[in-house]
Each structure stands twice: as C-alpha cells, then as structure tokens.
Figure 1 (cartoon, rainbow, N blue to C red):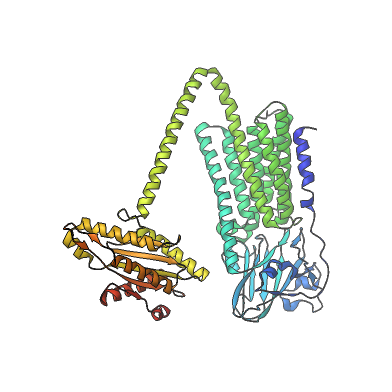
Figure 2: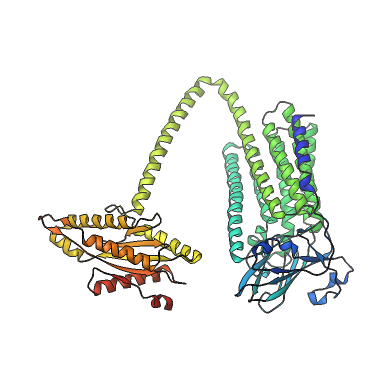
Length: 615
C-alpha cells in the first residue's frame, strides 16, 4: 500500500466515531418547562424539547396547526440530542414550554440554526405579532419576519409568564432542527462572530478566484481559469448551503432557492474535473484522460437534469457525483505522483483534505451527523485548506518550470536574485521608515503638540466608547471640563509665548492628578481642558477637580518682567445619567462650567442631576 493510501486509511478509521449516528431517542410523554432566565437551562435546551414524527397517513401529518393534533399524541423527549433526520417524508412537530421566573418582562429568541428547510411554522401561546409565524424556503425570505439567514422566533415573556411553543417542520431533503434559546445579546454576539468568520472565508475565496483570473489573463495558462471557476462555484455552493444566497441573491425566488444548491454543486464537480485534467497534464488518449472526459460530460448531463428533476433527487445525485469526482481526481493524482509528476503531491494532499471534509459535510447535510454548524465550519476549514494547497501546488508547478528555464540562464538568474535581495532590503527599510512615520503621525493626530495631552479628536473617538461601556456595565462615567480664568489677560500682558508656558503648567498639574491608567486628560481648545474619568462617581471627580484647583492656585511662574504670575481654573462636572448620550453629558458639563465662571471663577460646579434625569 502506498504511503498516501495508508494515510487515508488511518484518517478514515480516526473519523469513525464522528460518523456514528445519534443515539436513539427515548419515548415518553410530557415536556418539562424551561426556565428562560437560567443560562444553564438554556444551554441544555434539548433536554426540554419534545418532538413527534408524523409519517404520511398519520392524522398529525395533515394537521396544519397544534389545534389539529390528536389529544393523545405520544410526544418523544429529545433527551439532549439534536433533532437530526435523514431524508424523510414525515412531518415533525416540536414542542417546548418556557417560563420567565424573573421579576420583569424580557425577550428571548428561539433560533433554528439550519437554513435549508422547506416549511417551518412557529406557534406560541399568548398575544403578540409572532404568535404564528409561517416561513421556510418555500416562502419569500421576508416571511421570516427578521432579516436573518436562520429562523428566529422572538419570545417575549412577562414576569412569571409561561408559554407553549410548537413548531411544524417539513422538508423535501434531509431534516436538521438544531434549536437554541438565546438572549438578544447572545444572538448578536454569535452573529458578529459568524459574520467575521464567513467574511474571512468568502473574502479569501473571492481574492483567490480574482487572483487566478488575473493570472489567466496575464499568462494565458488555462488551469488558472479553471481554478478561478472552481473557487467561484464552491463559494456559491457554500453561500447557498449557508442560507446567504437565499437571503441576498434571490430572496423572492422560492423555487430557485432549493435548485441553486444542486446546481452550484454540479458546477463545482465540473470545475474540479476541468481543473484537474489541466493541472495534472493528463493525456487525452490515456485511461485517466478518458475517465476525466467522461466525468466532464457526466457533469454536463447532471447540470441539465438539475433543471428538470425535483430537488430531493438532484441533491442526492449531484452529491454522489461530486464525491465520485473527488475520489477519481484523488486516485488519478496519486498515479501521476507515482509517475514522477512532483506537483501532484500537493494536489493529492489538497484532495485528501477535501475528501474528508466533503464526506463529513455531506453526512451532516443528509442528516446522518448532528451539529450542522460545526460541520459547516469544518467544511470551510477543509475548503480553505484545499484552496491553499491547490494554489501552493500551482506555485510548485510554476517553480519547477521556472527552475528549468533558469538552469539555462544561470548567470542571469544569479544577478536577478542579487537585485531581488537588494530591492527587498530596500523595501524593508522603506517599510520600517514608513511604519515609524505612521506611528509618529498617529501620535501627532491624537495628541496636542504643545502640552502632550490628548487632543479633541481623541476625545471624540473615545467618549462614545466610554459612554457605551458605562451603560453596559453600570459603572459611573464622569466628565469634567476645566477652563483657565482670565487667560486672555495673560496673553495680552506677557504675550502668547508666556501663555503657552502656563498651558504647559496646567497640563503638568492635570497629568499629576489624573493618575489612574484609564483616566484621560484632554486639551480640546485654547485654554480649555477635559477630564474623562471612567469608573469615578461625582464625589470622586469633585475631589480630583478641587485638588487641581488648589494646586494651580498655589503655583506660580516668573513672568518676563520678573513678577510672579498666577492663574486660577474653573471646572464643571457631570456624571453620565441613565439613557443619556454623550452630547447631553458634554452640554451639562459645559453648563456647569459656565455657572462656575458666572459665579466668580476659581471654583467647581456640579451639574444638576435633575436636568440629566429629565433629558
């Protein structure tokens, strides 16, 4: 046995536990009630789920609402298992009881984390806009009520309220019903994480595809075009399987929403075949060449069948076709490698990764493996690894051809390498200098050049973040505005140069008293300063400002005419109130500063909290 086949056998054996089917569900009646306020209970949602499988002919199969279900329906508890079923014509009913044991009304979301379901209908007891929600791929995308690739049911529970939630799920393909019960914050956090992950994945595919397309136009090498075609088709297939295509490309085309999946899959198979035949330099009249030509024509035929046959048949046929193409390309690449074609080694590794990932993903998509989200992530990793290896294989192929050419022109190559190293060193030096200049520019753009304090731009950037953090954590945030009294007199008497010296003195004193790492001192005007004090309440800020005023009052500078010059400060303080935005906070601090000025200066005035509550 060859080393590659031996490695494939080891990997296959190691994956056998992952391919095991979920445990059989135990029968039972009654569903326990989920405490919606308990995070641990929410994480164990599947221990509170009951379901019923209604085969054709069962009265529950034809029921269109929970009221039409038989009263003696034998619900089956999920017992912590995901609801995952292979291809079936049954209708699945899912039931959940939830209760709000908290002391206030709250909102949660029941999320069905699988986008490829033909019909999904939610019912929940109680009043509200979502007590009946009929959606699924057979309806326009906006039928979901919430613009999201998965199915979301908002569940609003008053204090002590209990609701019953029932789902009716039917699909022409495999049936995955991975459910979670999440707070809005959890939904948003997970959505942001997946947005980043998918953005990186699809963005990388797009970059590689465009890059290969540009290589094709510049070099005329056809396998670059086939590789770009393959990555575009694979990206479209994953985009459709993930529910994004239905959301963004054809939200109103209910018929094409399902057809697009087997269609993009057969395009993947065709592009795989064309790229493999071109990259591996398979001769047309050989057995491998004949096999690959036959596979290409099979793909064309299946492409036509996809537009004629129903989804339930085409998705199965095209999946078998795609796996057959992957296995065939893997075997042919091994043969080419054994014949001494070195780039085939990386090609073999690429298709080994794809074969393992595609097999697991297919098993999950057809309902033989649970946790579709994890399998989707695994498939993205497999596709990403394959794309990297394929592009590296093309780099190796180019390297071998280039070495043959450079062997004829050894002297020219040596000179070229020397110039490349020289230019690289110059580029590195230039990049280091540019990086240093950028750091200096960033410092200058956020700091006041005279006093060294942060400037108005930095304050405008950080204040909204501090306000948002204070609202989220409940910690206080206090803003103090400080202004030099009669500063114009200083400038008029001794000149602006001496005035700048006074500003530096004020900055030194502010820096001395604003000690905590997160406190920020800002010069945002001529003689105007601001203190951002996160985690400091009104009392603490008042002490800081009084200490600053005492310090500056007791300090003096020797003026150009030899006299001792002194200056005082006025300050206004405001603490962020509940529901208040940064503009209102700044205005209140500014109003307090104005009062300090109008009441004689050299004092600290605290903003009226009643004004903040009114705002």
